[in-house]
Image: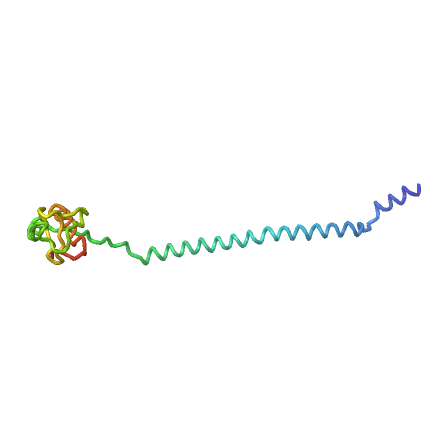
Length: 149
């Protein structure tokens, strides 16, 4: 009976649990706190970085919208009219001074072919090629010298 009384006394007495169990629970609490902080703090840090990034995007979009004006479209370059094209000198391929290659079609100008010459720079081109180019552009296809007004 003596053993039963001692066992009952241990169960009913308000004494603290053994120290090994206390150390185990303290270790688990410290471990849980460490794991929690190791997972929680980087998440909080990344959330703060994300919020700062979103604020920066919002601020830059807002300031760019108010400061810049819409882009100005450059006026389309107009070529020469038919009457202006007729005023340009015409000659044959054998009269050319600066070369016998047409810069528009990249073909060689033969000696008997009609040629249109740009008076500013004396570059010559096939008549059809020069008329097609100069009706759309008002510059020489070789040196970009401006023609017309």
